[in-house]
Image (cartoon, rainbow, N blue to C red):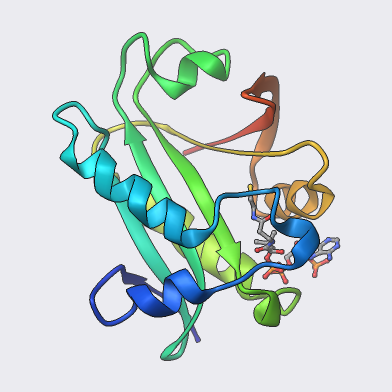
Length: 165
Ligand SMILES: CC(C)(COP(=O)(O)OP(=O)(O)OC[C@H]1O[C@@H](n2cnc3c(N)ncnc32)[C@H](O)[C@@H]1OP(=O)(O)O)[C@@H](O)C(=O)NCCC(=O)NCCS
């Protein structure tokens, strides 16, 4: 059964060893780079709070997710999405290892992530964003299936999608 485990000493090596298919490598940073980025963000005085998860199938690590809470204001991600600068959650990384794709595990994991964000664990908001490269057609279909809607906006070359709750 799919479950989310906070990143820890017990699972971080398995997380950074996860691999996507060769043709998917341009869609997102490798996990070791995401872990380094999260570390640096945690050191910044005004860095945004983040939640990092190993996506597990029973006890096996099969994927990785990184969720940012972006406070309100001029720099809010919601501004790029055509919003009014409200605080929001942003799924900045989401991947399943190539061995575990196409088995319904990603959808189950995303359902858990949406339920988690709905509890507003890092701060208040009504919106949850994610984005993907326009050529990532699998992610486009996947994300629509998960309930996200394309906003019609592009940020840093990525299609912005949003879910409200
Ligand atoms: C995108 C990704 C997370 C999807 O996870 P997954 O576990 O493979 O997807 P699921 O098996 O849960 O599929 C759920 C839905 O996604 C869509 N989907 C998944 N794989 C697909 C494929 N190869 N072709 C078309 N649609 C696909 C379908 O709508 C599917 O529903 P269905 O099976 O009822 O048709 C996964 O493929 C992945 O990690 N890709 C590489 C990393 C990446 O691109 N991350 C996003 C960066 S922005």
